[in-house]
Structures are given as structure tokens and as C-alpha cells.
Length: 106
Image (tube, rainbow, N blue to C red; front, side):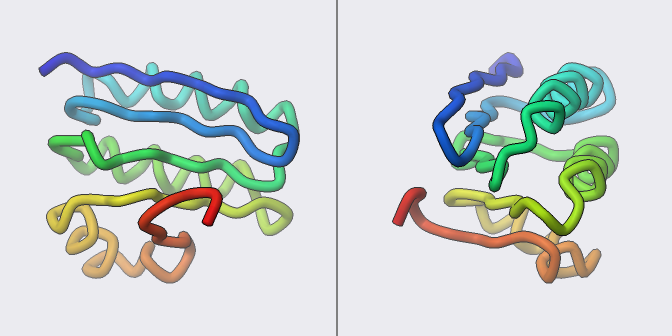
């Protein structure tokens, strides 16, 4: 499965639907999307990651990058992450910096 990012802008948040593998080859594309989103100062960046099949350390760095760029003024929300991604977030401690939900908005 190839990598894709679909962006949707709403009044209070921006959503990115991520599909495929987020790795060293695709992380720059995701990073560019994050940079564009941050300039719009959303209250939240919502990542729909249910169809994210793989995330390497480069992908993890991009999640950290997204959280850093958003700062404390905005939330980073992951919707329906697969267990493999949850485990990575737990092991790295990043799980304490993001919100995990089954759907957004709730």
C-alpha cells in the first residue's frame, strides 16, 4: 500500500488522514503537511491513523515534530491507532503528549 495524506480544514481543527507506511521515505511529505497546518494555528491537529500500516522511527520523529510545532496551545489527537502504534507510543512515553480517541469529534 502506498503512502497518502489527505488534509481537511475545519473551523477549530485540521484533520490529516494517513494511510500506508510512515517511514524515512514518506516522513518528509508528512512533515510538509504538518508545517502547513501549524501556520494556520488550529486548536487541534487530528490524525486519522486507523489505516497507518507501519511507522518507523522516522515516522515517530514526525509525530514528535508535530507535537513540538503545535506547542501547548493545540492538541495532537490520534484517532483509532493500531495496537502496534499504541505500543510504540507507550514505550517512548509519547502517549502522555497526545490524545487517543475512537472518533473525532466525539
